[in-house]
Length: 74
Image (cartoon, rainbow, N blue to C red; front, side, top):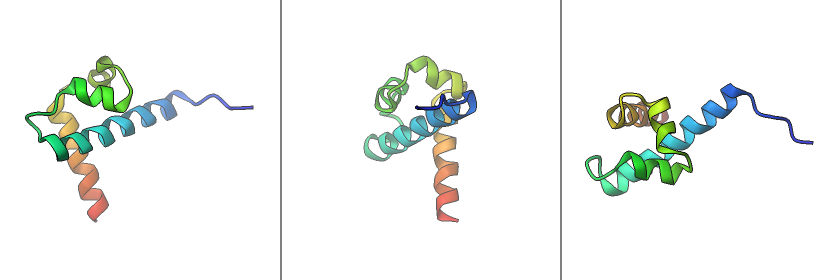
């Protein structure tokens, strides 16, 4: 029987999906050409979820992607 995920686990999964999708789209399409709607579709979430987790929009999402990449290189 499958255990229900906690809210924190669901949040982490959503944020991870958004950052991963954004990283891929920024890399292939560039920052300017990447829309939050495209990130949401690629991550499999609503556009509202993007704003819920990244209230400042694309700039905040880009910072999260950048921070993750810096952490990976360290």
